[in-house]
Length: 229
Image (cartoon, rainbow, N blue to C red; front, side):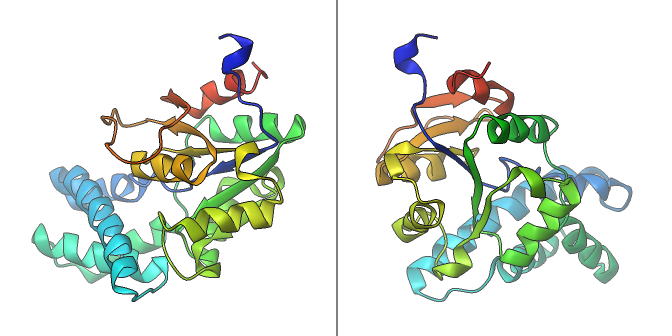
């Protein structure tokens, strides 16, 4: 990669769910109870979770991400004909301590050691995010864990990305934002950040304002973009 294509930034900000943490891990851990419905539940749960964040944002009826996640799970279980209170509680508990993707601890350590400011910017509520960060042992490689609860609206509202600029203390143009969600990547780009779309799931490109500067399939490729690899 030519030097002109390298990211010239001072901070690396990450989406949490699907980017650092594997949202499919909760249902995957419960395959003993879910059987062949595990994958369908994981997909529907995530889709409905995102839909509820967007719809609540449009309605101006914000609630925290734990409530949205629970509501989305209840809808998904009902849709798939699953009625099991103990399983429901188990899934919610597992979502709070999702596995991080294998490369995440090493990449964050590289960035931290190289002097980049590191942060999470997520729809997750503060307690959910801290549970996940602590379970994955990432606390010492993150300078900030930022939740949309501080602005009272979910992504992709511009105030969320502005909060990252304000809290990290770095201009948008000097922040590299990483997300596995194409809509999130486009929104951050439209806001003015440099953006790396971590396309873990083989999605097609969105037709939305903004455009990611780079597309990768694993965060293990990020250090090369920052001239660390």
